[in-house]
Image (tube, rainbow, N blue to C red; front, side):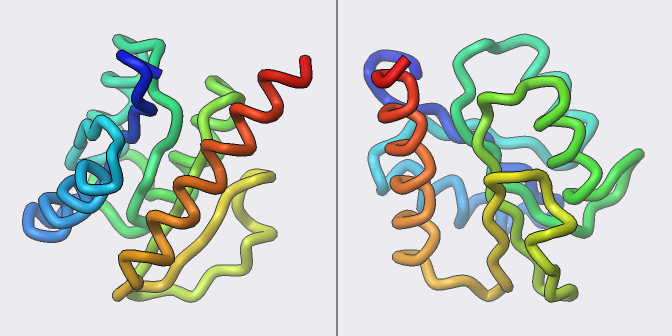
Length: 130
């Protein structure tokens, strides 16, 4: 969290969809960062210690897709919350890391912002209870 606002990293290879997702995150009151693929997302995660949630697409070019990226993030940065979206595949949430949420594209913006708020609120509650 930076300046009292949670930080959300949007990972999406389509520039138009990425811009829309960033705007959605900003309009919900969060700070938004963006990456065009998993490799760029990992570089950003390595440079910053304030990312609270990653919102990633499944199908992307590069060394890993969104599913592999979500597992990598869970292993390397366990506190980071994860939302995974796909227009091509309907995934079982069981193939995603624990605590991840999956949404089909096109997704409803209110559903996504509600999921982000819920995941980030659970982080706050967990942190306070420790």
